[in-house]
Amino acid sequence: MTDRTPIAGGDPISPAQRAVLALVVDIIVPPSADGRMPGAAELGVTDYLLSHAAPALPAILADIDRLQALAGERHGSAFEALPAAARQTLVDGLRAAEPAFLERLALETVTCYYQSDRVLALIGVELRPPFPQGYQVLQGDLSLLAPVRRRGPIYRDV
Image (cartoon, rainbow, N blue to C red):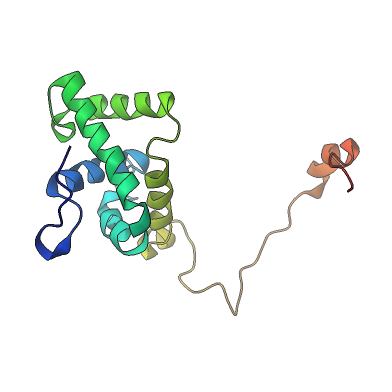
């Protein structure tokens, strides 16, 4: 287990945990192969966690510490020293066995990622608040709901 004592500046995340976090968030949202879209680590997810998800930090760090310990047990190496394929396999194996593993980190990672002005601009979203102008919502094909309407209500009136 890594020491969770606050380090310089009161940072509750140790340098080893920061290194593993950067690798894991890039597994969650990797950079695009062409380099156009950044990976999550490049957008400062760790700092986002400290400022916006502090209550979730103990659980996230426990998962990171567990991943680090498992890397040592299975590979005799720190997680960050493993080849990318071995890191991916380790994370995938734990997620398959325990779906809740890294669940909160994944949620916080994509939340941070899709709040980034850089990402929003790259995916073509106008950088402005939704109100007062709002956003145009394209009309969908409501005929696709016909099977649901034919099925009828599936709830009980109480």
